[in-house]
Structure formats: structure tokens, C-alpha cells
Length: 289
Image 1 (cartoon, rainbow, N blue to C red):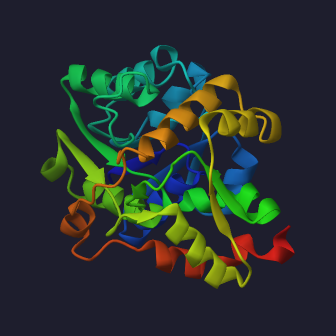
Image 2: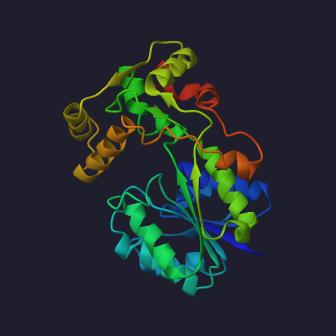
């Protein structure tokens, strides 16, 4: 039976890809560095220890799989020594199709690591599909959660830019659709967004209603945001630079375009930010502090 290898399976997107693939009857192998945690989350699913930084783990994860969901963990920065040679290894070991989770605009933003991976796939001459989602709705429970829970605010240098947030559940569903019918999506780069573009002020209003306490959006200056990431959130300089550039770009409409790809692939509308916030309200409750 065809088998899909899902890398970074413990992440938000990876878990949704696994869930969707299993719901559709696809055979899945989950791969990540932390095998004890894999056992906790994926009991009964085939598992493999896998680390981009340890090429010795690649073959055992790949052998017997004919499709791969490829995701770059934030901590992996050098594509020339990790994802690019992993792609070569995958094809050499019989993988027929790679689905790569990139980012919106990677084709033109040469400074983001995803650009190098996309270029490598294009040069491979093999079969691939690239997913280019915009900002995740789930950033609210990961990158922004601490500010919301501790300070009752969203603190970003995004001005009044609007964002077409995409739910990672929809990303997982699109990926599974590609794995079900790879030939239909081969050689395509799919932009993925939610159904509407909203401001962070509107997001704060949704959070306020969901958690029954005031949450505000506080536009940050570039200098103030850099200081915040470095001193309070303890991000590295590289992480800080990337986060700052991406969020400043929102001021200029970098993530406001709404596209219909999710609806076209899934045959239903994409999930809204309002629906996501409502179902995830416990994430930001005062009791969680």
C-alpha cells in the first residue's frame, strides 16, 4: 500500500496532516526527533525517529514510503545541509512525490529558507507540490499566546494591515487531498488563505468575546518589537529578524490577499478566524496563566 511519511509530525501542521490522511484511509508513517512523544500522540501509527541534522536517520524513515510531507522546523536554518540533501535522498530511495510546506511569497523572498527548498525541488526534475499558506490562525496559540495570556495584548509591528489567516486544519486537509491524487497536483504551487482578511484589532475583539476579558491589539514600533523579542521572548537574532520583517510586511498588504484554493480543493469554504477562536478559547483563559 502507498505510504506517506509525515516529517515534523508533532507540530501543529504535521498533526493535522496525519489526522486527515488517516481519516481518508491513507497509510502513514510519522517521523520526528522525539520518539517517546510520538508514542504518546500516535499510538498505533507507524513511527520513525528522524532528524534533519542526522542523515543516518533518513533512510530508515524514508524506506517504504512513496510520498513525503516535508516541513522545515524553525530551528533548522541551513537548507544546503538539511532539507535539500534530504529531498535528494527521498527521491533516490523511491519517493515519487514530495509535498513541501513553504510560506506565502517564498518564490520571491530569496532571504527566507523556504526559497532555497523550492528552488531545489524545481531543479530536481521529479514530482512535487508546494503549499504556500499565509499566516496561521494557530499563531494565536503559539507565537502570540504568551503576550495574550500574560499581558492581555497582541503586540506586533503590523500597523493596521489585514491578514487572511488560514486554519492549519485546512492545510492538513489540502495536503491529504494532494496525497490522495498526486498526479492532479504535480508541479503546482498552491497559495492557501482563509476566507477573509481582517486586522489584528478585529482579532483582539474576537479574543475579547471568547475569553470574557479585554484583549487589545497594540501596534509595536520596529525597535520596540525587536527589543521585546530579544529581551522578553529570548528569540535569537535570526528569529527576531525574520519575525520582524514578516510582520512589518503586513503593514503593506503582504498577507491580505484572499485566494479560493482551499475551497476549490476541498469543495467547502475554509475555516474562519472567528470559528477558530471560538473553539480554542480555553487556550487564552485567565486560568491558563
